[in-house]
Length: 314
Image 1 (cartoon, rainbow, N blue to C red):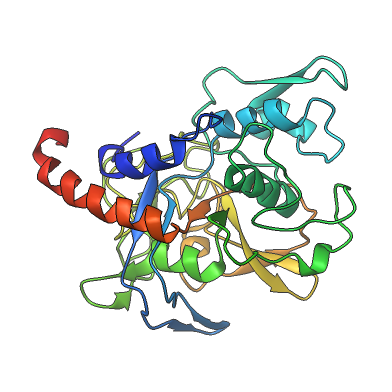
Image 2: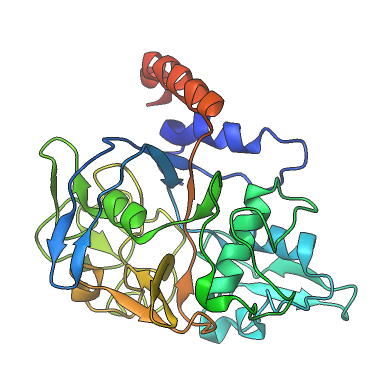
């Protein structure tokens, strides 16, 4: 994957727990207190604090680790059988019987983004990450889900807990990471640092390109469009799979970013979507990490050291 060196310190911070099995690359998002971006459906992207966002979408390999830790019998429906059908762009195979289910990635699809997740799968994965992985709880932590059922009894009111350190992105956190341009304190129209509609193409180093409009007609490994990072350095916030966010719209939850069959307009800042939180389709997951004060100091110190070593990483 590209740009791992620039995210290496943050990856190591989250992987330092002895129980951790999933490592992630994180991209720092600074410039706290930025103004929002007016759109027809609202004003988005204002965030009053520094945070870190997943450089990439959560992959099949990462979600498989979660399933193997928490879904031996799977009463919460964390696995969708469609994930095992390559014809439907899955990537995770389940074996065995309930109580002894095991999971593995399909050949060649480990680094593709997980999809066929619903909103509650996404926040349960976030809880597990927030709680240190391993045997970490899925029903509390960053979010509280009640009743122990696939669709929790408090489905319409699930919100992020104060003090959560790893969570699903809010819409504003997601939007800022995708479109905000720090040097000009303004926003781009597309999540590749461009106001020109994104070109849908096969994986390429060409700028302003993405997996969209059936140019590939399949998922691509995360970070495949190496010349098309957002201004902060995230990848695939346009195309590949849609991504859940926390927004509540009536009884629905928000998602953004387009997917591999979407037209370029669906990747734009103006494109906003919501659907039933129980829906499982071409929607995946991107997380945020909000450092605790002590961790924030480590990040700052580490980034200063990383800047001194930049040439070694090039």
